[in-house]
Amino acid sequence: MPITRNSNNTIGFGHFNGIAEDIVIFTIDGGATLATETNPGEAMERIMELLLERSTVLAIGIEDGAGGFRVMLQNSGWDSSSLQTAIRALSPLGSNSYDASGATVTDFVF
Image (spheres, rainbow, N blue to C red):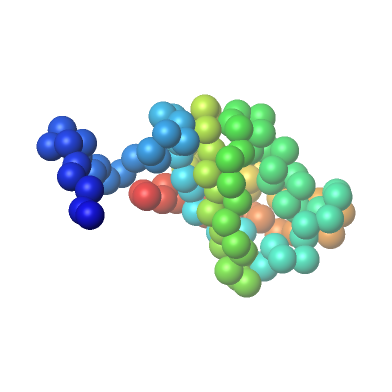
């Protein structure tokens, strides 16, 4: 038996359906793979610490093998420009001196 939907119950685009109201997603590209930079004291730990200074991290996407990944943040005090500047300023990152001087951050529209 088919379900009849209320005509006021519309399907919308560009929102997160109850996760939270104030979510932003950024694509971060470190410039080189971060897949081997996930241990304590390494580059990803420093990036996470930086993100947490001004936001709550809800999710981290897969790393693309070339340093690119997405982050989903709530209550973010970051915009793409300020986050990019902050990541670049940390370079070299972590115990392996990861070079993030050319890192880029862009808004991801979901």
